[in-house]
Amino acid sequence: MAIEINVQETPNPNSIKISTNQTIFEGPRSTSLKKGDATEHPLASALLGIEGIDNIFGIKDFVTVSKIEDAEWDTILPQVEAAFQSVYA
Image (cartoon, rainbow, N blue to C red; front, side, top):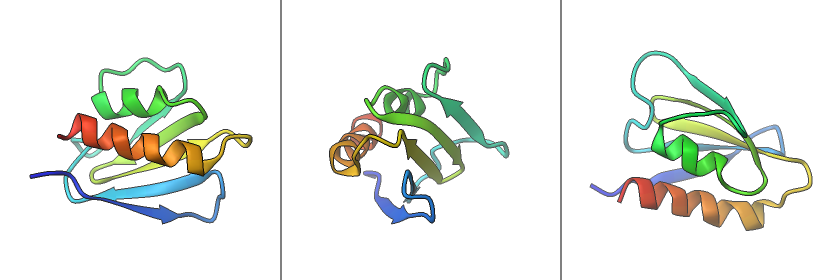
């Protein structure tokens, strides 16, 4: 089954919440990573590799992606969507 994502705005203009129809972070604990942090999680690694992404926070079936202030969502969002599709193809 292909992953479906739902992008939602948050009160913070530098963050978006992405909900999915699949569990993307296993276990009861949240995952919080900043640019440069080491991780073996394929989606987290792909997201943090995108130019302009500062950090991510995820648990179960959603992830909040935060960008640096100068980055533009119009540039970042297609890359975020591509990361989901490449990891969960």
